[in-house]
Amino acid sequence: MQRQILYNETQIREDKVKSAKEVLSKLNSDVKINTYKDYVDEDSIQKYLKEKNYDFIVDCSDNFKTKFLVNKIAIESNLRCVIAGIKDFYGQIITINPKETACYQCVFPKPLETPPNEGPLPVIGVTPGILGTLEALEVIKTALGLPNLENKILMVNLIDLRFNIIEIVKSEKCICSG
Ligand SMILES: [Zn+2]
Image 1 (tube, rainbow, N blue to C red):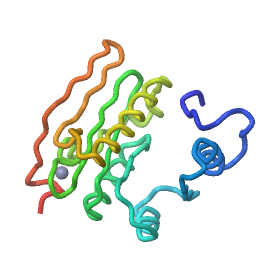
Image 2 (cartoon, helix red, strand yellow; image 1 turned 90 degrees about the vertical axis):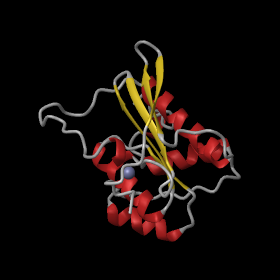
Image 3 (tube, rainbow, N blue to C red; image 1 turned 180 degrees about the vertical axis):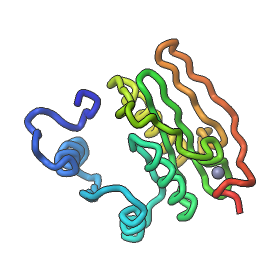
């Protein structure tokens, strides 16, 4: 798919984790990359989190269920996290510092219902490119202690080219409080 810039036609039928590692290793051979070919669920995330000391979770999933799971795991593990979502020309992104700031579930108390006959969300290739780059920016800024999207949600509208920041507050009733 055109939006998946780590892959090209010569890699068709290869495992995506293998192709991604090959391409990224050519970009910088000093970076150590661990790949896991597995489905994302609570058991698999917990298993891989135990293997290493991680600093940050970057959610690049394409569904609400996984985003809620990533948010929950980030809170339970006290790991900073950035979560982005897209649909056609629109996106949102939020950065979470579990003990300090509002989380994804403070903003979206439960997954939005997708009508059963609607199918996957439509996507134009540039939208995940822009939101994915913003996620990388959030990781860098958070690591450097620069202003980031904690207690804020950035709404991206690529039709009108508008970027709006909404201030959000931690909910006392949320899983991140208590
Ligand atoms: Zn919360």
